[in-house]
Image (cartoon, rainbow, N blue to C red; front, side, top):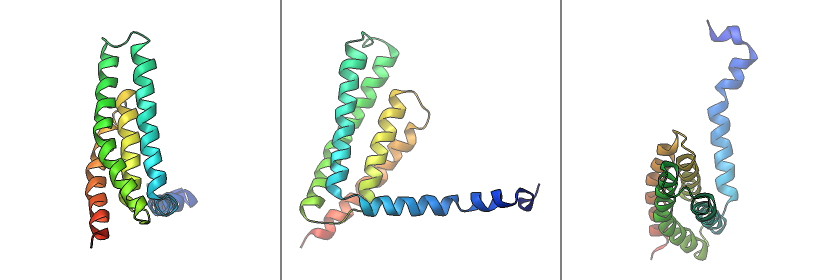
Amino acid sequence: VGASEFGPLALRHSRIPYLLCFAFQKMASALRPGVLACGILANTYVAKLYMSFGIRISGKIGTDEGANASKAQLNEAEYSGPFLAALLYLSAKGVECSYGGVIALLGQVVYTWSRIFGLPIFPIGALTRYIALPMLITSIYKTLD
């Protein structure tokens, strides 16, 4: 089956990577570090609410679901502090958003909620955080005299 047999469909699918890159660039340029810090903090807050009301109060704390949610929330909390500090520093310095901030927020959200709900994509979220942190470190380093 050749690509020409799909006609316009083949053309649309060949542009998907380009469109995703374009959308990511637009999103990254629109989000300032302070806004991204708010996103990180909001994700942390919702994860804590889920642990308190979705797991503890519902009596799931001793179950596999409760243990998995607890591990996800603790791991998310481990990364939130450094991400918040870096993004708030960059915001205070007036630095435009780096891709690292967007990747950090996306990584936190993807990891936390895919892990909590048992989706197999949570390693992608974990790996993106390993990419985001050195990008944020580089952005901070560039602000030093």
